[in-house]
Amino acid sequence: MLLSKSELARKAGVSVLTIDRIEKGKSCRMETKRKVLTALGISFSESKRIFNDLKD
Picture 1: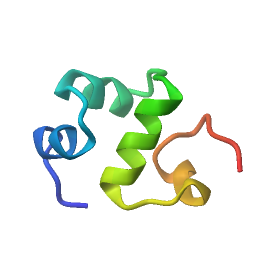
Picture 2: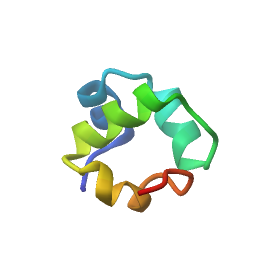
Picture 3: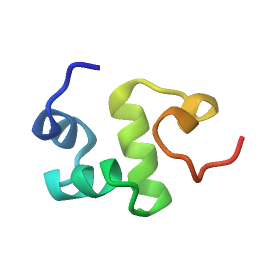
């Protein structure tokens, strides 16, 4: 999406450390996942592109 970690973190309202953890495959709260998906403009149905642990 051509966003830096800091840009994505700002748009999602989370910390850069949180984005870093997500990129490394660590778990996070569903609310955090929703914020990141919204910031990226990705629907929940397409969320597997970002989060492998989400189900359809």
